[in-house]
Image (cartoon, rainbow, N blue to C red; front, side, top):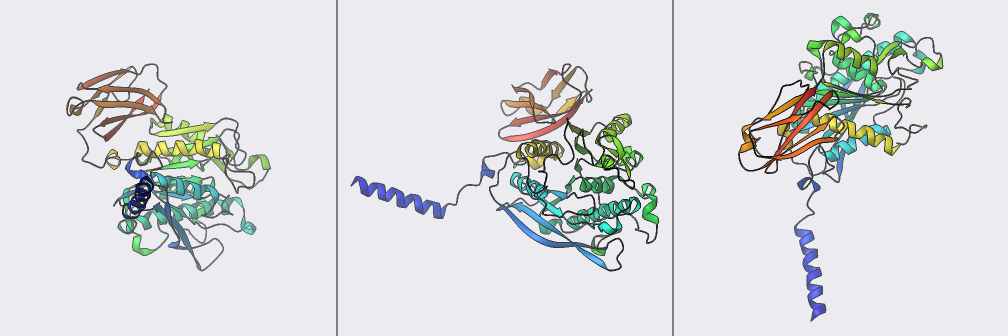
Length: 416
């Protein structure tokens, strides 16, 4: 009889597994912070633009690969568009780091895409040609953004939360897309054939859509001129760069300087950009120097595999930057709680967290973390005002996370 009961129990378990599929980790993890989806669905080779390459007369079709969490039902998801590196002469959308970023971010709950852009033939390489091709790549990034905004409902994308992520040449392209206005166009782009305005490329069906994005992550990127970054047109950026980069300058200088190539453009790297932003009074940026690291340091010497430890360090920075810039309402399944305010902002000595929800509906939890995700303060609270001493904290941007009854609201403040 005992063996019969055991057999019956096994049969019941098997039937339950068929009738009730395994619960997704999305039900128990925190979306955008934890890998809440086990599987990712990829749709490859979707045409998003057509444009003429340098030295050619007929258009080239550009494709993207689209990644999304398998089984996801969210109607409007944030999108991360990734742009590969390769000095504008090589590379592809299935580079190992782009696939890794797209896959792992999709497991967090993002929709992601890895895109093509126009490359320059090795036989054409020169300083002016590289500048022209970098501009073309920025045009192609713009086309991808506007393509997704046109098709936001088809891909279930939130058009207000599109982010860019680049590696090397890809980072130069995304910084160009965000900051080059018509008045900042390099002189080389006006040479025959004139490349046209930055947002003029691609299909006519999305020509009128905005190329604006919510933020970007630049791995070892640079700009041709710091003056292209305007205060009133600024978009939040996160910069990751090795201090000993021999290809794209960490501060400023000629690209590939240690290789003695005479035709490389002079550029301003992540440290120069960060100092420029500080001089302008802009605080909504992140700069993560990696001491002693060279170019693309999370890739192997062959560029065919990842150094998992170094890639994970970069991935955590990306995850936290994106989380800090998401609308808090994207992180809750219910109606957002009462507004939470943090003042003064910026702060130097203390901050006061104020909100009616602090004294309603029971106890709530306040947690404060830095841009690297390190938790510096945590406390359960039930009073309408909480004062916190931050005088000993380093200058920077901090995230205040307020949790009550399983729902979250987030706010940021700057410590001077």
